Length: 292
Ligand code: NAP
Image (cartoon, rainbow, N blue to C red; front, side):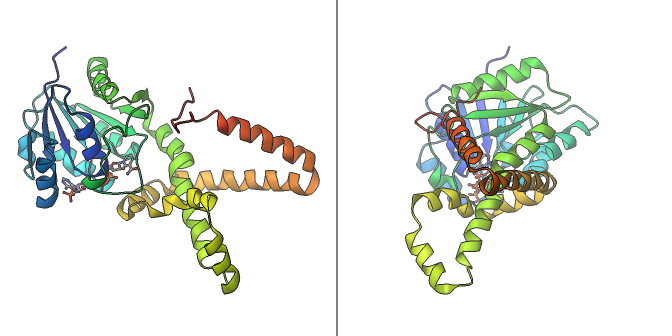
């Protein structure tokens, strides 16, 4: 297996910047590509890459490329880089949606060395200023191979991702999009609904009192409202069918719980205990997902 010497990251925001930070001092030649002069300047000032520019042609020597732009730009960038890269270069991405990208790759008439990716780590912030050097430690990182991917390429990419501290999970892209609707995109919409409902509550006195009392519970439940708006647009609009299906299931589950509140309170408390225990088992005390 050829050694990975050069890694390029395209789109140096929260995730791209965090990948560069996590790849420091691991012996790779690092190339950064971004859209704005300001981000290129910051990347060089912070010494995060050996070379950084706005010129996509600079990735041509890369062995592995991570595309970390907003979701809506990924396909355009793949179509550009596939014309420039070395034949054995592996192209990956970090986009929060996978099906439409893999479909595009699979429908290409010539092979593209593309393996979809999605690190299950992030924050509500955007831009390189918020990049975090240990963002991926103990995080799950989904890979969705395309019909052109082979096991040698998958293993090569997997090793690099594991060197960032992440745990790789290989899934089908459609299943990925359904799963992230449940645990990421629907919660974003619910977070918006909760905040919007309270913030627009018709009784102004109660609304003001509620907002002035809002503490850690409300803060945790509404953090996602602050997600960067481009990401909100791409995730919610791009995954709306799966989100709608998830919401319908959730409504049924809320009814299931509330029926017990009205009809069998003992059963409701039993269910509450069970949920409490299972939720405690999902994350480590440091907040990392430990579900296997
Ligand atoms: P972000 O902080 O806004 O970063 C996106 C970066 O892409 C920007 O800094 C921008 O660079 C750059 N960019 C935009 N168009 C470009 C182009 N045409 N060519 C080169 N660079 C371009 O967003 P992010 O949160 O890192 O999200 C990036 C990707 O990560 C998305 O696909 C998202 O689905 C995925 N993701 C996000 C999270 C999360 O929690 N945020 C988690 C997992 C995956 P300039 O600064 O130069 O303008």
